Figure 1: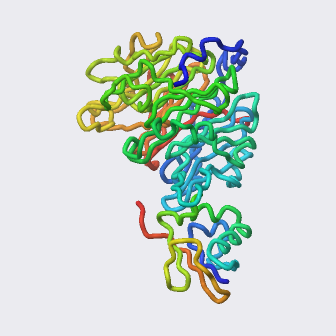
Figure 2: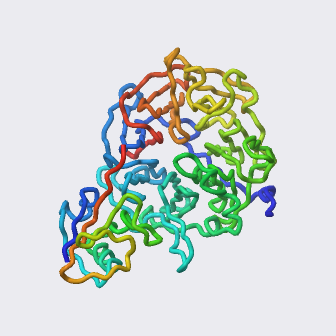
Figure 3: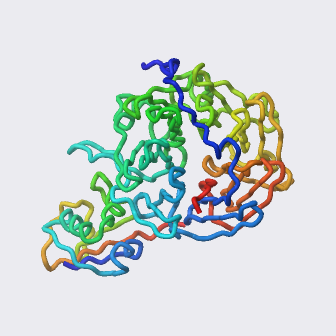
Length: 401
Length: 86
């Protein structure tokens, strides 16, 4: 097995810090809301006081993710399918005004005669490539597959270093190991210091790392518990729900896992369970995790009930965000403005995000179609929209206009 | 030959419910359809050449399950979306 400590000697880092990121953005924010029945754009004014919803785009499509390209701040990609039609990617180069479908959507290679080939059920995750590789995008699919585009999302090719890895079947498990909606490859992370350095998360499978732009991969799950299988310390087979890399401190990784909240300094190569410091009555199970855009010690989670039969709703029907400002040593409950009782929220792994303002704006969408916002880093929450379809993903974007 | 298009796929062919395409078998017909209306094939046929789960294809009144079915000039191909969802 390839060593997981292969990042011990890192190439000299280029500064990932940009002037705007260092002091905070202050322009209008556009929330890109992906739902089971289409996509919506919710745009603010500059002080984030008023918001205007437009859409639905791709009405009736199941939209799993919608992302802005931060390299030009005008190109958008959408991962979509319908209940009946196959998966595809749509692209807009004019802020979402017009859209064109990918000429070659993510798809596994055709299998040889007599062999059973894999079929992409849906594109689940979209990640823009490195800042110095304009046009490069990555897509994660269900079942687990990694795909790359070098032309801005028009043509997609399989990353065979992962999809055809000799360990692929063992790492990804069978269909019984995936989520009810199918096993997924998500959390595709590109190291801002090094375009060759990638991470992925798989539900199930665990966290994996590549140092050569996806040519080879190794598991990165040491220290992460897996209490649902016989060997809790196995090298792979884990269920990371959401993995994040800090943009200004890219050697700091966080994850909300099926088995708790973790943090890793990549140089150490071991996940440390920081969710143990959450209140015992709440626990440290959830789907999303959001990092502060400037402070690597600050993060937010949205706990859910992972007891008994796993309702995956806010513990006790009392929704709350929890924040740490000291890398998980302690957590503070943030529930002002959220329902005090009978609030059975489920917030999926892509459905919570932060903008880059100072103070940071936080946003989450529920499977019940509510969109909530805080422009005070979680101190006070307001419901921005109700009656939307089941929300899969929310991304906060700052467009070039 | 005549190909009947279900409503979810009509955005690919300018809203038409009926189009023309040619081929000696269903595979060739779908390739021709995709040349005329780029992208339409992959939405109903997967990368392993399987007809997607909720799509059905009829040649005249007979349902077909594979793409190697031979076609004649007078045949009519009907693409149908199964009734399911929620």
